[in-house]
Image (cartoon, rainbow, N blue to C red; front, side, top):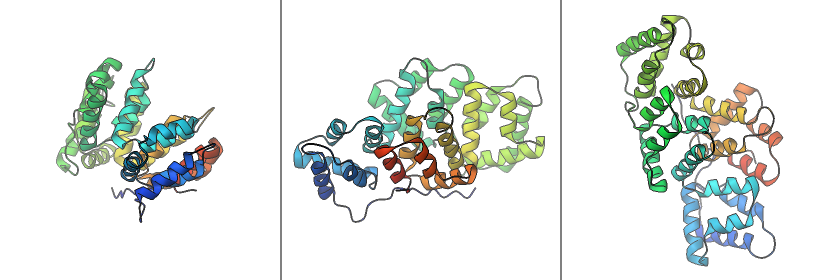
Length: 319
C-alpha cells in the first residue's frame, strides 16, 4: 500500500518561543481574553514547539501556561487548547483512562486508540500510562473488558505484532485458509484464530492475507467479520482491518460517525483532529471528502460554532 502520511500542522519557521510567550501573556492579561491571538499561535505550532513556549512562559513570567489558559478559556475551546498543549502520548493516555474511569467502559475509544498503533507507539503508551496512573494499562484493561475482546486488546498492548514490513507470501495463503476455517467454513467462530493473526502479523503481511482470503472465499474479510462477529469484538476487528487497508479512511469514518445523528461526539472530534494533526490529517481530510462527498471543513462548520469551530478548522487547514 502506498500510504504517505501528510500532517496538517508543520513546525513554524521562523519560530520564536519568547515572542509567542509574550503574545500569549498579553492575550490573557487584564479584562477579557483575546482568543484569536491564542488560536493563531497554538494551532500553528507543533506540540514540541508548544512545549518550548510553555517552558519560556514559566521562565519569563513564573506562571503555568496551561493553568492560565484554563482560567481564561472554557467549554469545547478549552478542551481543544489543553489537548494541543498536552504531549501526544500523555494526551492519549488521558483519553484511555477516561474511557475506563466512568460508569461503563467506552470501548470505541479503546479500539480507536489501541487498534491503530504500531508496536513502538504502543510501547510508549504502555510506559507512559503506568507512569501517569501508577497502574499497568494491561491490568486496567483486564478489569474493564472481558472475553475475546480483552484477549485481543491484551495481545495488542503487549507488542506482539511482527516488525513493520515483515512479509511471507506462502504463510499468507495458510493464514487465509486458517481464517476461513475459523469462520465461514464452520458453525460458530473460533475468535482465537482471528486474534492470533490480526494481532501478531505486520500490516504488510495482513494485506497479503486479506488478498488471499478474497481469492479463497470470494468475499472480503470485512464481509466475513460482519457475518461472524458482533459488538465490541466486531468493532475491534474491523478497526484493525480498516487500518491495515487505509488508516485515513478509518479515521474519516470515525469523524463522520461523530458528526452523524443527533448531537456531536465532541471528544472524538477533538481527539482525532488533535492527535492526527502532526501525522496524517491531510490524508484523513482527503479521504473524508472522497467517501462522503463533502469537505471535512463543511461538516465541522455545520456541527460546531464560534472559536471552537475556528480552532478545529485551523488544525485541518481550513481556516
